[in-house]
Length: 454
Image (cartoon, rainbow, N blue to C red):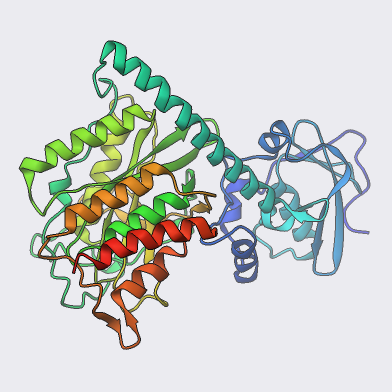
């Protein structure tokens, strides 16, 4: 049999911690992605077996955990404290990763990590699927709480008229800092970060940079992210309307206990390029909306209309600045999510926009004059069951705002030989919209408004 004789007293094994799960093999990573939804890679530290036990998604029991690896089977007990007891030896493991790493190394000594959440099954189902379920439930609870909080703050504001933003809340970013004219008609070829070197004032700030993976720079992603599909819908709609770059903010909540960032609302900025006069009024309105909904500022988005959805050097600096602003003066960690949407780039696969969540890791201390390192953020996208009135209202406000704009997209023109611009936006938004005929009819009304704009 595999392993040694059972020890006289339980032995706690702590090696193979959660951060080891960054080292996924190609097959395991593909399997994990397919099991947890589009674009998600849930191997982070915030959600543990103890969390799943506490919220009733799994229950303790004998022999409920299993690993199948290279023809070998391992069985484990799930204990009430979230630890795992290997049935064969009685050894105690602190996490799925620790147990999976230990078992796999017995079969394959060269194995570096266990990929526990993708490898360990609870009653026949991979643990990563329970983690995905937890994220979906948590986000929906946040949405319900948001509705209650909206009314609560409305009642407060109607009686006492509080300041639209608590003094402790960080200021919004200056939209005019990121809304600059771009040379989008000329193809920009992305470069690898390792080719940049030290900052050079002569370098084009519009140079696009390929994203790194956290594992490639020996880091683990320090937070989980769950994004509502309504956020993607509104953001993608906004980015499709104009040939110029657009920008907007993301509202949500940050849970320090679970290290989970939930993105619940998108707030498009209805302002023109470098229009500093209207930008302040737009930001004030967004401040009010965030406060009324009991939400925090958790990030921003912008578009690269005809180019790859990759950050430029200017985007990297803006993102780093935003991260520092959200962190504030208390030195507590709060992530700031950046998202780039590329609606009309012909390198996209099909009609769907490329949507790229990213973050920036500061350069090494010994190289303070280097650029920050842009890294891809793994996100769980949670499908909403309905379109909120807020989202529909924002869509109609955007239609009205861009109706007479000189850079309005001509929706009757062709994006490619067999696809009009209208077909393009419909196809892309269908990726995020609720799969319900009633909401399809509502969106058709919005599209008819677009058609009347040209």
